[in-house]
Amino acid sequence: MSHDYVLNVYFDGSCPLCQREIAIYRRFPEAAAIQWVDVSNGEDLGVDFSCAAAMARFHVRDSEGRLFSGAAAFSQMWRQFPGWRWLGWLSAWPPMSWLFELAYRLFLPIRPTLQKWVRRWSS
Image (tube, rainbow, N blue to C red; front, top):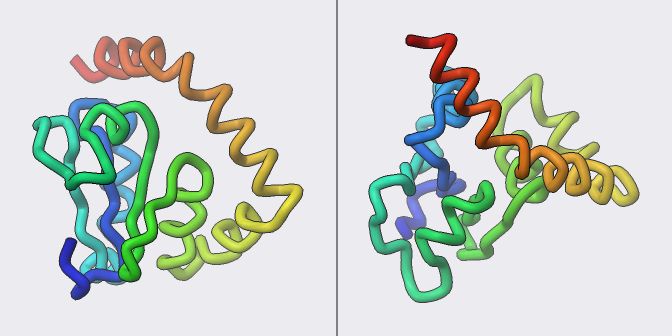
């Protein structure tokens, strides 16, 4: 990981939902300080982080090398963008952090179905 970036954002580039969401964030000027890593190509991500883990949940790594997963990862990323910072701080504050993580965990099993729908609507 390069320490020139504020965050490394690991996302599933094969997921149409993920592609669209990441495209929104990448439009912000602050996105230039983030390294966007598409994990769908099976690239080696280091000893403490597998491609399988990266594909299963959303992750970010901060400039200090700390790895965040799920709702905590979104919280870290949202804090980088004006207009989204409030959501980043809100989602980091217990008990809201627990609710955001619960919502994220409930979303994960329906993600494949949503991906199929988006692919069907996009074609």
